Length: 106
View 1 (spheres, helix red, strand yellow):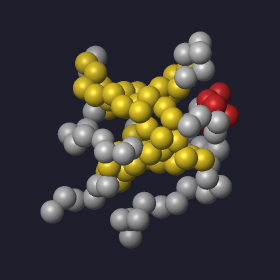
View 2: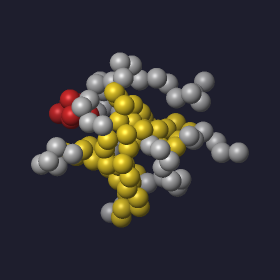
View 3: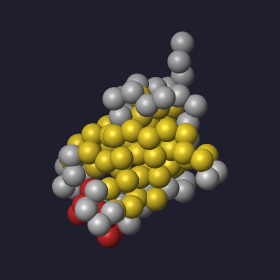
View 4: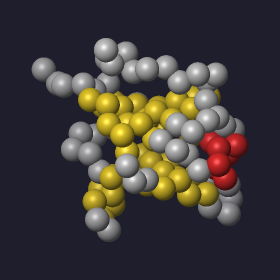
């Protein structure tokens, strides 16, 4: 049985290219992402549901990208290990009034 896990991403970057597209750089995980979704409420924090077993907390989102994150429908997620790109994928972004706790958090 897979173990469900919530992790805080301690070091990540949200970048915006000249066309206005957003990209998040995070460290690589062992499991592949399946139907990834980011939940965001316009504040300091967001949740990246990578798959049914793995949720990543993105704390202290920089104020300069908050309004952009509230308007996009998807975002490119790039997982890196050192200077190597391990995987990249698009994640849907859902804007909500409040970020819900993951269903597997007690």
